[in-house]
Image 1 (cartoon, one colour):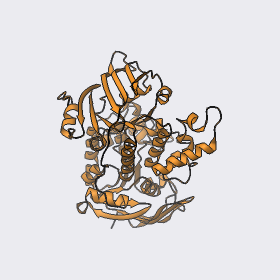
Image 2 (cartoon, helix red, strand yellow; image 1 turned 120 degrees about the vertical axis):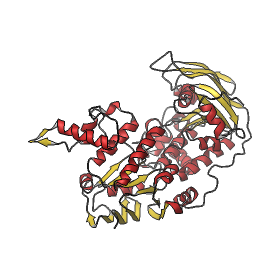
Image 3 (cartoon, helix red, strand yellow; image 1 turned 180 degrees about the vertical axis):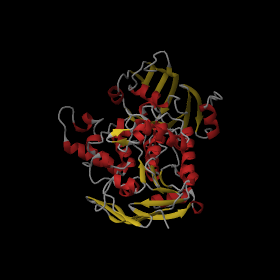
Image 4 (cartoon, helix red, strand yellow; image 1 turned 180 degrees about the horizontal axis):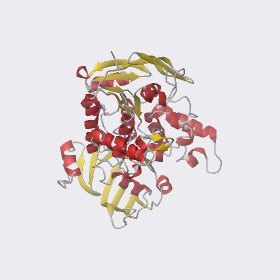
Length: 507
């Protein structure tokens, strides 16, 4: 008998059928991956399971053990043994670890919280999970990885039999991921069933027993891991056969568009510390220049310093089309033909509460709409054009950006900068947090933009992405340029040797 069965789950929103007869089951002690493109219905299905969408707002049945469940709210789901850990953590950072674990369920007598009992239980729980964390530590003092593990401890304090993890490693370091997987393996041995949502197929294949693929709100199939390959999973996700994920590059380079000489950027909090140290490079028309390096190497700081968005002191020279320019602010960068798709699209790329048209025209409003009066009709036409070009899936330009999937949000951000008609475009982690199908579309668009004459500087922490898309690769190590490789010369081994500082190989 299955620990969980979700039978023929249907969920509709105005004008959209988000789930269309989805089936899913989970065994005790199983690690079951749930994958699909953004917008496939994964999160909606888990919100049905966890009581975010209460009984009566969806069709189908949830069966746990042998009982059909009718959850009215999240607490009902928790009482039935279901715990969900969303990518956006729900901890109160001002409270201690112990207070967060038992928030709303504090042990008490006659209405008075028994603090000694609370911290005793928290200590035992953390010890059982092999987490060396003091339960009296404020959560805000912990790193994001430890906060993620506190979320898991909180879920298990509720005697969860079913644990849902939604992109749990998105903000974790490699060592934190290893710790997380060690804990999850231990939970499997205790009989906890886990549903794992991730775009990272390496993790899916490292941990899963079975994989279920959703596409367009329907179940495509459930398979044992042994019967799958990554290519087959991707094909099921996108609904077509997948060959090489990166487009073939045939760029013929033009003249130099952007040249940076001896750029140095200093730490905001420690003005004597150099985060970027005497970096020089150039990028040409029709070229994709990739920037690789380990976390903390200074990749994002380099782009921000050139773009006028770095708050610390910056020195060096920037030339656009051979002319030296002074860039002290993002508006100055935009005027000089530089666009910047930032790493965190939700914080710096979009106003989530605003429509697609408002977001798309934000950076180039004067060019699109006019210098003095806005022209809504012109803005809408421009937005529709870029939406069609980038294949943004939305009902209209008036759709609120925050309701879009991650991949479509990223396309809106990209479209915003394309409407400024840039000469050079900075892309910082252009495919972070989006699914394989959307990644392929972004890759094809990057290749097309370069072929059309744009100069592109791309930062990515995914080495295959850097090698697959770039015509040339620069490698940073501790803020300094540690390597430069042509597309033919760039190999994973050479790039990693330079990124780790083992060799200052310059080719």
